[in-house]
Image (cartoon, rainbow over all chains, first blue to last red; front, side, top):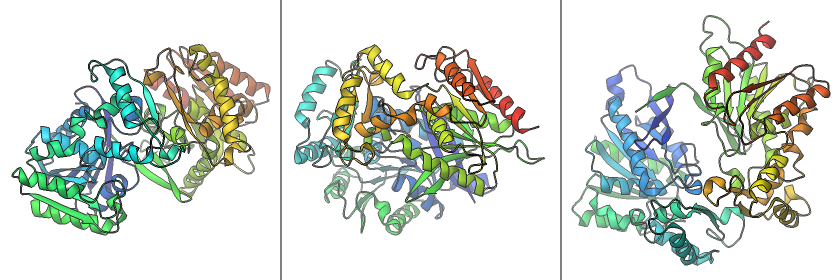
Length: 295
Length: 301
């Protein structure tokens, strides 16, 4: 028997979040609160029902006694398209989620970020060293979101180009991009492949792009901030990742170790691309083993 | 922090190689007796999903009165209009599947309820499935804040704000792009319409479609989204409700839909107005009361 609860709560800046709480059924509340629980942060245009890791992993880990709290942040669904999904503001969403779990009495909290979510979690943990966080699982964390996108757009000759978008964004958002009351949606054709078809486009507003993918999106550049993280980290990356370069997780881990945090593990998941749930047995084993070492 | 624990169960209904995500709200209000029927299927509006609007707030209200609900995410949910897979006509087999799912659970009486675009979807469905001998479980339709015609409504709005590009320009390009058979066209393209919902270029005044999703939702040939052409084919009970201060859809449209249905011979058409706007905000309980009374009078005799 599994308990699933849909929960709504507010951040301190009054953003309404939805989350899915999955708990193994136990009559003993103390047992539940002492069981490891993972706070999940989804990827680009994601949510807690998105295919792959967000949808499948919580349920799979529950069978190994690990509970979950999957949050739809302000970047969920169309956040980046409609202008509300500002990368830096995610700190409020994770704060509110952790506050809720702590208030309920959960004592063994981990955070898992998937893809974009991994970069969001890395940013959060570099700013906040909350002792309630037992560890971070960063699945498919990009070395740098801005640089990865520039490289990809250049590869496919995107229309408009990265530099054109940057110029336009500066013009629209000046002088202060965060406070700017001006914003506009734009489409980038050939962002993911060689055609103009919808599955090769990307859509942002200038403001969401600026803070997630622009050259000045400093909080989305993981290699610049990862060394500030003091919590244990498990990096996960598919061996056949088609979005990240094979070295990205390894290099991020090296930066963390060089900064004095030795509690870092890197696991490349065989037979998996960007979504490690393409090999569920391996990712589940990696997470279960790592969490059991820490609890 | 305000925390609200919901009791809905998240489910996935198999649909071909895909699935339909849904929130199933099983009432416990009738624990000492048998559960009331019908059960209500809720369909979201434009860019919506089962986590927002009436499909979120109505199920708990109905459950208190003994009615269970299933709020579904159709092909039109979230950003599907932007990426080409949100074709209105494709929601019909999804609703078929949701109904079969409920029948397999033992429900015999089903009501379809849709909000805004969802209203167009449920009217389209009920018009296509209007033979009671073939579809005996479909017992009624609730259309909330539903436009008389989605294409006309969008065209009027775009004209009003002088959208860029204009409705005519998009139509011309879509025809050219999707010919000869829009549904089977292999090429598609995402488009932005600035000043579609207001007089600025800001995101909240912008709409996004692909030519194909636009064609079947907003194009002049989108009969499936033209509610007045659908409602006249429906002979089961219909409840229409709209906010009197709706600034998205003219309040007269609910009246007109009701009149068309009555003129076409439907003997059980009801229309109500609430003192609120398009989202029916702040009138959730009142709307719930209207629906509960409407259900009770027809199905609890």
